[in-house]
Length: 165
Image 1 (cartoon, rainbow, N blue to C red):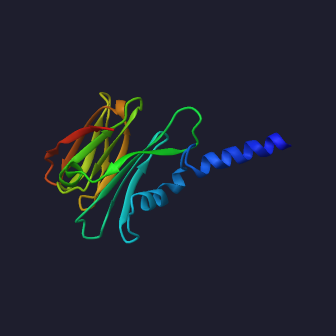
Image 2: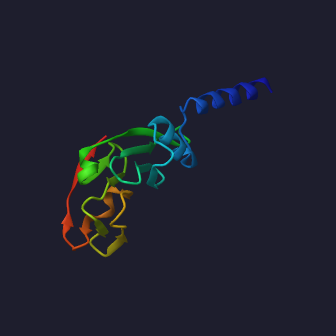
């Protein structure tokens, strides 16, 4: 009985110190707390089994903060902060974030180019994802999904830049 109590206390200590990860339901609270995001800022995001990506911004879209989390393999029960902050690439374009050893990538943008569509061509079929051209976005996709192409409201392609974390 004493050993079970010690184990529970140890796991509780690890969880309290975020040594075993953050659950997906607690990511928004962690982002607002750790990156000091105001309550009136909007948070947009995408969460998969191994990666989570968010962008937060005020109503006038004059600023932003992005956040990328990963779910570590092994003894991990949640997500760990991997990188974030403010980048001109996110403000003016689309930034692709990759993490070595992970099979997913995040695309984050304030959407100044008015991207309205994302096409994923895997060589057999083309999957289309609609994006609100008036809002910032954060999308997590598998690295091996296929060729990724973003289109603006005039059907022009919009480039993205890779940023390894």
